[in-house]
Image: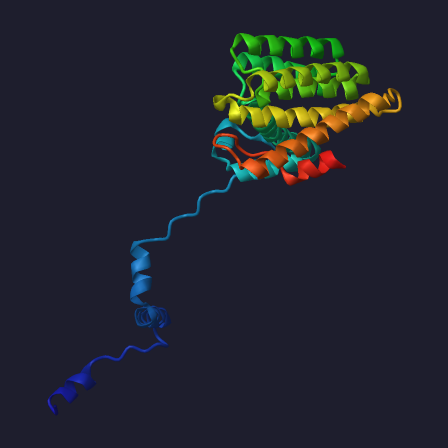
Amino acid sequence: MHSLKPCIRSMPMMSCQSSPRICHQLFRSQSTRSTQTPFRRLSQWHPRPTPRPQIPLLPLSQLTRSQRRHKSFYRATRELYRDYPFSVAFATFCIISASGLFFYANHVYQNYIISEFASYPEPVANKLRRALWYSNYDLQPDSALKYYQQALEVAQECGMDAYSDEILGVKFQLASFLEKQMQKPRLAIDVLEEVRKQCTEWETEKGGLVENRGMRSRVLGQSVRLSVKLGELYARPDIMNTEAAEESLVWAVTTLLKEQERREREGVKEGEGDWMSAEEIGGALE
C-alpha cells in the first residue's frame, strides 16, 4: 500500500478548469449509464411502431377509390349523413317503412289468406279469395257474386260434401254479402231459405242412419242457426214480415228444445258428437 502512494501522487492530475469539455463528456456518460434501465435499453433496439396514418375527413366526392375502400361502414355512414342529412333520414324512413309493410303483408297472407282456406282444395280456395277480395276490399258486386257461384260449382266438381261446414260457410258468407254490402236482404233471405230447405230435407231422409249420426247433429245445428238468422231478417223494418219471422223463430226454438230433451232422455248416442253450446242455446231462446 505504501508503495502505491508515490505512484498515485506521481500521476498527473487532470483539471476540469484546464479541459472543461472533457469533464462534461465524462459526467454525461456516467449519468447516462446510471439512469438507463433495461426497458429503456430494450426500446433502443425495438422501437415502437409508427401509428397508421389517418384518412382525413373529407367529403365522399373528394376521396379516391382506394380511400373509399378502406373506410369503415360506420364512418362512411356518418360522413354521408353529414353531407346529406335530409336524404339519409328520408332513405332510412323508407327502408324501415318498407320492411314493416313487408312483414305485415306476410302476416296477413299467412293468417288470413292461407290459414283461412286451408280446409278447401286449391281451386276452390282460389275462387273464394277472389270473391272475398271483390266483396271486402275492392267492392265489385257482380264479380263477387260470379266468383262465389264459381267456388260452389268447383267445390261440387271436387267432390266436397254439400252439407259440410265449409260449403255451408260459403253460403252463409254469400248471404251476409247480399245483406250488408249490397243492401239486398231479400236476396239474402232467398239464399238462406234454400239452404234451410236442403238441410231439413237431408235430415228427414238420411239423418236417421247410424253412419250419419255425427253429421245429423251438425246439420241440425246449422238449421237452427239459419232459422234464427231468417227470423232477424224477416223482422227488419224494410221487410217487416212478422208471420214469417215468428214461424222461423218458433221452428228454431222447437227443434232446439226437442233435440235437447231427446239427448237428456236417451243419452248421447255413439257418434252423435256435441250439440249446440249453452251460449248458442241462450241466444236462440232470446
